[in-house]
Image (cartoon, each protein chain N blue to C red):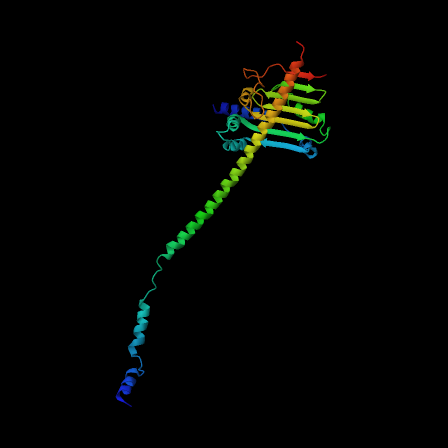
Amino acid sequence: MDPLEQGFRDALSREPAPDWFAERVMARVCDEKPQPRRGLGWLRWAAVAAMVVVVAGGVRLDQVRRERVAGEQAKEQLMLALHVTGSKLHMAQVRVQSIDRFRPE
Amino acid sequence: MRYQIALALAVSVGSLAAQQLKFTAAFERLSEKASETVNITLDPQTLGFAGKFLSEEKKDEAQARKVITKLTGIQIRSFEFEKEGAYTEADVNDIRAQLKGPEWSLIVSSRSRKDRETSEIYVHRDGGLVILAAEPKELTVVNIIGKIDPSDLKGLGGQFGIPKNIVPADGTPKPATKAKDEEE
């Protein structure tokens, strides 16, 4: 075996871990507390708030749309009622006028 | 004071209720025979609601807006029939019977025996109006409830087909009943 090969073998040979290694690793693991995940908490609340706003906005929009439809229907009914009233008053007037026209002086 | 307010309120409510026609079930059933029906009942809430959607820019809607502030209700029943004889004189008399009281005045009455057409206009002493128009194939009852008087209708003159001179120049109905029989 030449001296170079011998040198490699010595350098790369398996050695058992020292006794303190496992203890120190475990101690380090216990010392490291889990870090709070910054940023995700407010994001979650922001998402909830956005969802609430979207749902409330949708409900309000639907309410406004329904109110508008009901209001337009009421308006149409009112205008129709006034038209019917107008036409019947007109009819009465035409009749009265035609009677007046034929009335003897 | 409270008693007077309550009394005034009760009298006012009673007066408005007195202006409101009650349509019998038999009368309402005429819609089953009719080819066309207009059935409109607008209460104060609906009138107020409709008023919010009336435009100030359109002349007819602006005028309607002004008029409905004095109204507490509108009822219309109008039936158009395919054939004659679908309604009876009893149906019309049911309405007339409600207008017999001293608080109602018949201001216009025209009857054509030839065409068998009748038009009657009644006004209530506290405001309010009923138009009864009967033709062989058509029967219409208009009931306007509220503090409206003929001068308010004058304001609607020329619109909705309402003639400009349906009422005298002073805006008050003629005290004497104008009953006519055309073509006896």
